[in-house]
Length: 326
Image 1 (cartoon, rainbow, N blue to C red):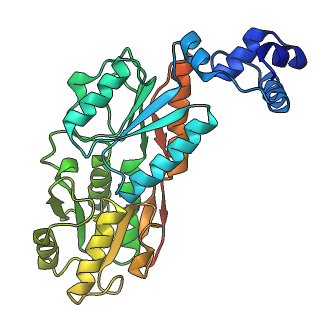
Image 2 (cartoon, one colour):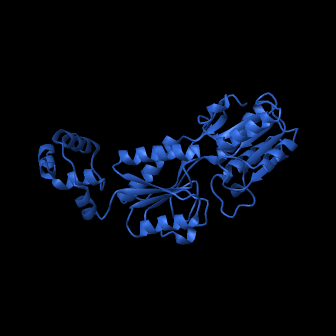
């Protein structure tokens, strides 16, 4: 069986260069890296993972702390993050917190005890006091001081939703979102900017009176009946922007159950991409935040830690994808 010396000899490079390619550490020219990777495949060389982790003081495991996997966008993002990190040579550990702060603190402790090398944070909880900036951390949709944040352009998403509803002929607007992203929020995340962009753009275009419906945090699957009754009480509303596609789907189902039609009577825009709710019989018009591009940005930040490079925030562009609900 080939060893690292065989690979170095055949590639015409030093053992240290092969080691940098295997461990994703340090700079290697693209041509040299590709040559070494080709020789590794030809030789059938398999690195000793235990020896690698002991030598590098790394186990190449990235933990992804996620509130739950039932939210369709979270599931899609998890899939693409795992694919991205695997491409970079890292393993992904899924840490579903069920939004319980105690679980999240235990996952942070795993990083401090070197059981994982880095941690991706996706949380609505107030975990700031438990974070240690000496360790590799990256946050999605949430800003913590001194920690790189990857997010889609939520504010622009709200702007695009407002413009589209106006262009579609809507005159009486409503926003529907959970109270974690509204005025009652204890912790503000980037998702709050969806609402801000929507309200700001409507005000700029002469629509200052927007109905704001907030509901208790955590209702990813079904909205409370009280929320649907509030939505129904605003019979004049003909344009709704929902904070996510899952919320948009719930709103659409209940509007039509009560006798109004989408998009004939009410037009609805969601946020995430609109592809996950075809069981409605129609595709949701949605602000598309591409999970593959977001995963790529997260991967770049993680790679920066391994390469000892400073990394900054990443804002991923969004676009409106017109479906059947506007």
